[in-house]
Image (cartoon, rainbow over all chains, first blue to last red; front, side, top):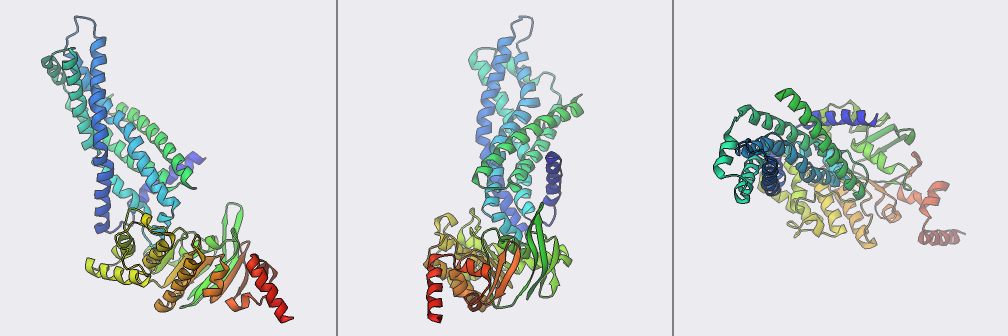
Length: 245
Length: 255
């Protein structure tokens, strides 16, 4: 019953997010701040993880190709497919559920605990629009972060391949160009946009509707991370089934 | 004038407010007193529109809140100022930005006009040099004064204060109480203060409402508080040793 109530409250919050908009002059500032906090602030960790995980994917693929009949360029091909189809959009989104999601839940939750959300409501401001909508707009730039993750993942793979002595740079480049299907990029970015929506709204829901004090803010952040990850994994399965099969 | 008629509010099976009726007049400082859990905060939040009552009506200058459209409710809320127990200042903004916030949201004033108004109200609450401080850098008393400045910056008709002097030392608490009373007269507002501080009752209470277990147990002036024979109120008022001694002295004098 509680789950059903939560699902209902979540969708009502999503509808409320688009109602009674905040003055544009104020909203503009909030969006720019959230772009800085959520997008620009995440590029460093995303770049670091992407580069090294790309490298690990390449090394493991290369080490598992022991048959001399399998062409060496397959390492680049496998890295590209892994990074573009799954690693960048899904794996990075799970990491972002931890980084950005926890930030959103704890910042909104702290505002709830310290009555700042009540203060907004007393002033007649649609607090959901004021707090959640700028995050939603800021995270519409999330595909930009994922494109960086894709590029650096493949680059990391190339560095590991060449400097680890697994294949030549030429073979790797041939591999990443082999049988390239442009729709895979569309599929990856379609997933990314859906995950961005989840990343903006689910953690906001857990922050906005939390009750209690500082301890509950911590609990809400953990719950938010768990559910954001679960929803991303489920949606990943559904979207893959719908778009690729 | 705010008129409350037969207000009731429950949470689950627990009835918090049980048919409260009262009224609040312009230019007066009204105190809602009672023990913790007596329903003061729920009553105040119903008046603010943060909680929807189960039954009963609240009218603001003749307009019944439940009968207003969303836009009318929004306009009405722009006429309300609120000082929260914990100040509720936006911690990502400076003190000046906090005070300017209602102006940015509800007026079309230019930045310099808003700045001038912020200067006036910050000066009024005796914080002329605190503009660039963050709320975390301000003391409890300063934060309360900033909260008052933010509440009055848009010239509200109604000012609500939830335990405005809780957590403050007695001297600062009196300063805050007096500031609220002065501002009430100056702006000719209807001010409602939730409190369980008897000093506030004596200092600024013009009309006192005593709530007990969600019922309006007693209503009167601050002078009447000390003459009442209402047992529950007497128990509440004379619960501290200081007041017990004052009461004993009074009774001795009368005899």
